[in-house]
Amino acid sequence: MSSGSAAGSVERPSEPEPEVPEPDIRLSPTARTEAFSDAVFAIAITLLVLEVHVPQEADVIRYGGLLPALLHGWPTYLSYLATFLTVGVIWLNHHSVFQKIRHVDRALQWWNLILLLLVSFTPFPNALLAEYLGDVHHGGLLGRDARVAAAVYAIVLAAATLPWLAIWLHVAKHPDLLEPGWTRAYAKREVKRSSVGVVVYSVGITVAFAVPLLAIVLFLLAAVYYAATSGGSRRRRR
Image 1 (cartoon, one colour):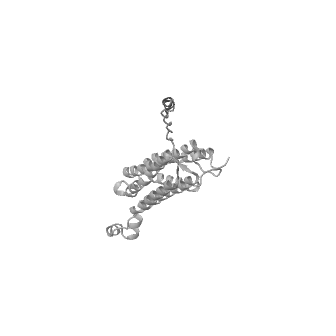
Image 2: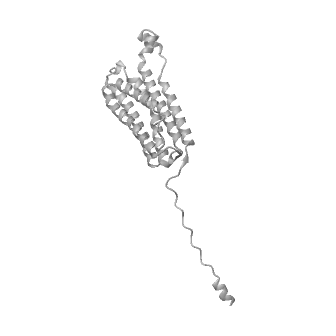
Image 3: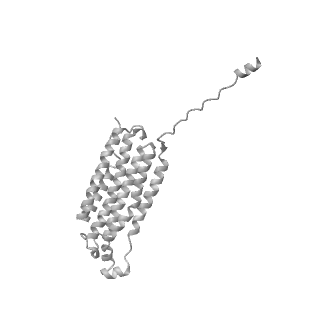
């Protein structure tokens, strides 16, 4: 009797609990992404000024005085102004974007990292432009070297517009990443605004090969446009 009860009370091995699949999308707050991005912007924009040099004594003698020597450095000042404004405007827009984003996922982090890659690279084309734009020893404003330097500058700026487009396309696909009140429709309008930069800077590559100085003017106008619209589309609610 007891042996039967003991046999009847034998517990069956418990079935293993089903494994919970790891979610494909892990959402994170934006604070660390913003802090890291701000540091990259600050370093990149500071490095630009390293290309602005005080004229050496040999330059002062060569050009007949300090003022002519300073005026001779106009390509350096122009490239610094254009690049500073461009990077500064990218920062303004970046700040505005992350005011509207509540969470970041892995894809958004990667697109932001690619944007920072290009921003941190801007001191190089800025240095090229400062060195070769308008230098008579390299053919002047329309010389081959000036055109190549301007084209490289344009290519880097054109490339920097692509992560913006990708960020807003991703947010339009995942509007749950946005803060309350910001909708998929708003993200789609921002896709159109980002597309303007893709077109302008892509055209700038061709213009740079033809008239380098005109390409710089075009980039300055683009910076003014994106500065004026850095707050994004005015309408945000349905």
